[in-house]
Amino acid sequence: MTELATYPVDLEPFRLGGPAERRAVAEEIDAACRATGFLVLTGHGVPAAVVDRWMEASSEFFALPVEEKQRWVVEEPTANVGYTALGQEALAYTLGEETPPDLFEALTFNREDAVGPVFDAMRAFFHPNVWPDRPAGLRDAYLAYETELRALSHTVLRAMELALDLPPEWLVDRNRNAVITTRSINYERAPGSPEPEPGQMRLGAHTDYGVLTLLAADDVPGLEVRRDGTWHPVSVAPGTFVGNIGDLLARWTNDRWQSTLHRVVPPPAGLDGSARRRSIARFMDGDPSLTVECIPSCVTAEHPARYGPVNAGEWLVAKIVGGRTRELVDQP
Image (cartoon, rainbow, N blue to C red; front, side, top):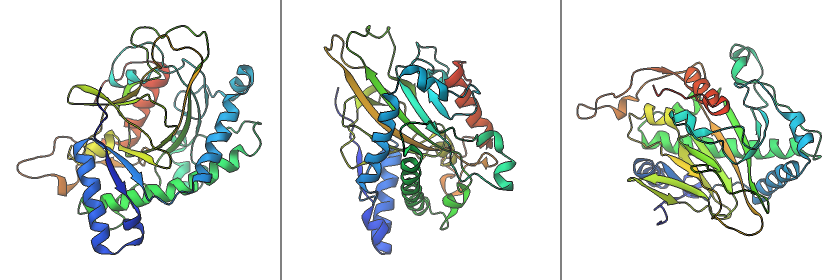
């Protein structure tokens, strides 16, 4: 397989430059979102130490005994927080495809600042986090990471606003009350483990549900993106973030931008010894109270609106429940 032709985007000129530099970055993001929906972000300003600290804290948790990790399982399918044990999800179900369970475990957190009347009215979407006893400093490491990633996500949204000819803060304002889910994922194959079942993935083929995903990961093969009927590997170079848009933003842009199918494949068959891939995915899944309709600048006589209005909260619940309960999801 050939490596996907990803679009590197240096955000530093957008963060620090003037109007011409910001416009150039916006055009790069527009090109990437039109072509693949995936972009590789550099110049983002997120300190490597903050990323490493959260990655290592998550790894220490995953190294704990299974019975201790199981204490932090939250059974409510729509809660989307806490520990997810190996084999408990199958993301291909969110696309209406039946597959064996995925080969990953995860630790998931909601936003900690979901307080006040606005969030109380949508409490089902903002389940309180559960914080494991070990390792020490886990919560502080997460909060430091979330602070940096929130700033990065707003930078990307502002560049997207410029690309879509939207007023300043249009996307940022509509995502201030968004569901934010940060998921540390551990794909680990212990020595002597059985080979995967036919069609079994570390993470099944899926598109992301919401607006914007930002991914940090080990530089270990596994991530693949589907383009032109073919699966292409994607590398995550040290110090970079992979950004990709979700289904809601694709609908919002009337398919001007792509929400692209992707998966994480198992290690090669017959591999001796252990194999591990770690990643941190931060999902911005939209304000649950928001009605998403095609952005006017993305609708023309040649490209009329392809989608009617959809409630972001209803959309998100269907996707989350499908993946966690392994119930097939009908596509709107």
